Length: 391
Image 1 (cartoon, one colour):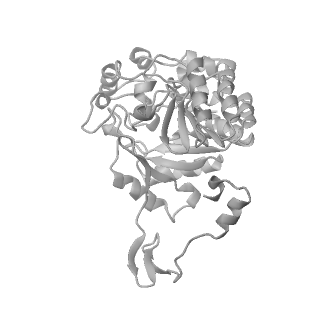
Image 2: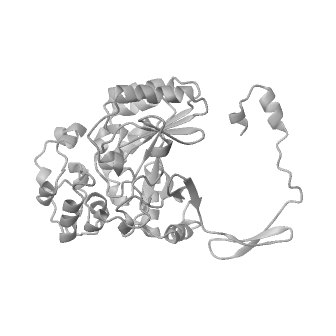
Image 3: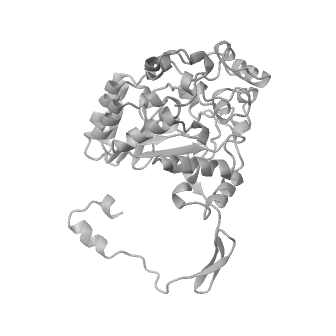
């Protein structure tokens, strides 16, 4: 097991491994934090200057991962604010993903054609300093109300184009099993909902919440995918690995979405190690997100070229499963686009010249026949397949 902070060494194993105990004893103020971690002047000012802007909070478990002697510890940088977080840079937005303008009900964001985001809670086990949804997670420790849940489910049920529901927040895994099932069961019962995803940082910051009962509950409503959020290999502890493997062993696939942060994980070596450690516990590296232009985050953002360069240094040097998609969520609600290095050197008569990861050039001969129509589509549809099946 990972080492506890000295202040928690006398806590019983039963309490330490109780996620509700962890929540009750979360560190939520600069004064409490300063008793446990020697803060720099920049961090002390950051805690004070952001107190009215965004919550401070971390579980004792996650706090124990902080290197108390190094101000650039990647866990520390994600959990403790600095002075720069209180400044709003040009171009930064309160709602960087343009979610509120596509929010037909309190809990639903419907931005993409076939899927919706369902905001189930406004609270988290750790308030990440890179949070893109801080306008919501700075709120009042509220779970989704019964009325809001009913409206959300009714919206999904009345929109037959919705085949995929992503439950996020806040962190949905901070709901009780009963509250979570009260949301999963009616969504699962909607005939056109083909899959449910849950966005959570609990396996990273509060792994004791992932109990056998929770894993069994998620499997009951399969297909349910868990999308978690490890940003650095330092976060992959024995407890975190056990949580992820408990889900996978129960038949619940787990994928990871990391966020690229300057001076936290902005190197190919760090991202490669993170991907390898994720794969070792059967968690698939999915996205590497470019930092959103949320207010107060410019000090953590990297240039777009930095992410592309990281992919350039990964592709061909490690398995393709370890290379995540570099995703940019376009400011203001444009949706995700993905970037990658350009391997096309030039297009020539009858072919395309491409380079490989060593810089060597090869010609791919293009076919003379360019019609890509699939004649069997009509047969497939005539036999009762849906348009979605043929797509």
